[in-house]
Length: 118
Image 1 (cartoon, one colour):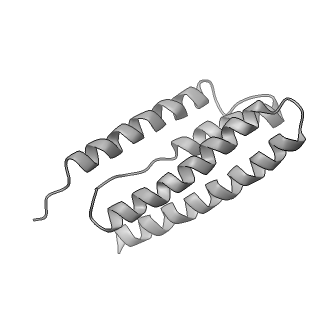
Image 2: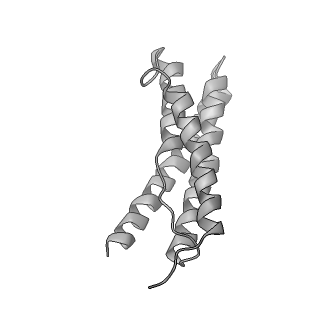
């Protein structure tokens, strides 16, 4: 039950990330000097699909993985910098990027060492 709820939350998060990615792509196409928005859009669109893929693999028992909100942290910081002139907090984007790198590496580890069934 708890795992099913977690998967549903992650799917909702992926949907929101995907929608936000499209919105930011449109905004970056129509605003001058919006390279931050294009980067944020790409990060959200790519990782929304990755979240769905990880949920599908975890649901089928292929891997056992936890997913954070690193892409949202990274993209949120870049978006705030574009519109508000400041970020979420100091080093938010680099922290989000570092968490993304570790998340991808942990996905590789989870696939290399599948969980054992008791």
